[in-house]
Image (tube, rainbow, N blue to C red):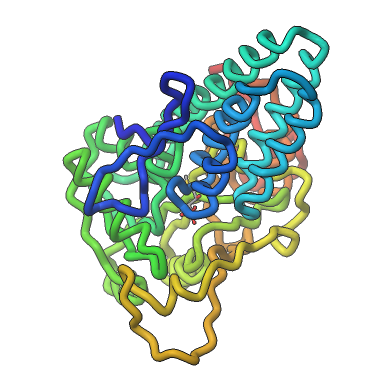
Length: 365
Ligand code: MRU
């Protein structure tokens, strides 16, 4: 499996995604400010992957602390919280680390450090397991053969491993389905062209690369059976923030009667965020738009917009595939039920639901 982020020998090791597909370089981080910078600079990216990285980063930052643990812990958490604003998995991971710290903060420092590292490892492992489960649930939804269009990179590179949208692709292959993947290029950072294509080829799946503006024509010609994307934050009403361009694909999919699936672990759901209007959208540097592979492609003096994400209103989403089952509209009810459902149970939507209770049927796995 592709190793995106790892704890190794007292350090955090990241596969530098800025250099893919040209070079496979692993960078070793021994200080937390450098690791927080690596998240900002997209050495590692993808919502679950940055959550796992921040968790390891907090454990890493606490290693040299000898006194003033409370102050140090808060400073380290703040550094990661300030790295990227949209993916809620980052804040979810920080909060998990904060809960562990609060529980052991009066214990000896060595014990605190051990517990924090254990928690980071648990977050890492749970993400892989969540992806495998949601991959299986998603794969069951797909016809055979199936032609999937995906955007950005929601694969092993964007998670602790296996992937969300690409996890469904992998699981469908494992089920013996014949899968064709259209990968959008994903301007401006080219996560589709560089990362999704690299990752799928690495696993022996040959993707078909398209530029972002080819998607509509492909759908109109009946060459796409479904769209599957990941998410950076899902609001409590089911609105989905994901890589810029996702909204356009969702509108196109609806126009052409094509299912639009969002694949995400529950750590991507922000139950405190009522709707997409409240999701903070990261604005990135103009150079990502004016330059391509380090070369200027636009004249000097232009104005540039570069929002890294957009919000897809829930009405465009056919289903949200999580590790606890497939959620169907209305998402306000199915997500609420998810928040209250016991762990380790699969949720199965019943539609059209009449109430929160009727919205889900809990079935012991
Ligand atoms: O800016 P990025 O590359 O971090 O954006 C990543 C995405 O938008 C992914 O689709 C999302 O994080 C889901 S990853 C499983």
